[in-house]
Image (cartoon, rainbow, N blue to C red; front, side, top):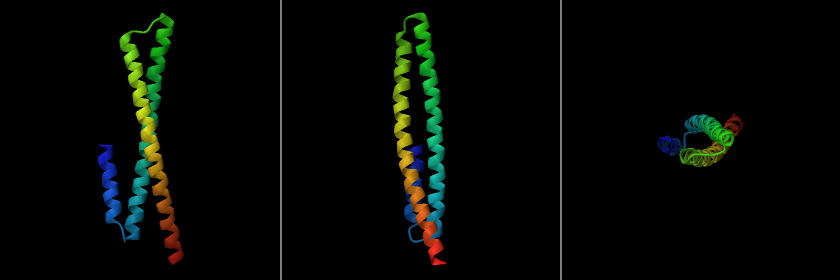
Length: 112
C-alpha cells in the first residue's frame, strides 16, 4: 500500500512540472505524508521492542525460552529492521520534499 502512495506522489510531482503552485502543493502533501509514515514506523518499533522485551523478561524469570518465543523475538527483530529501513527511506524523502518546498517558496518570494 505504501508503495502505491509513493508512486502516486511521484506521478503527481511529474504532472506538476511547470506549475509552481501545484508543485508546492504536491511537495507539501508529500512531506506531510512522509512525516506521518516516520511516526507510524516509530510507533510500530516501540510496540515491537515492548513485545521482544516482555518475552525476554519472562524467559529470564523462568530460566528458559520456548522455540515459539524465540521465533517471535526473531520476527520482532526482522520487523524492527524493516521499520528502520522505512524510517530511513521516508526521512530522505522528507528532506528532498522539504528542500524542494523551500526552494519553491524562495523562488516565489524572489519573483515578487
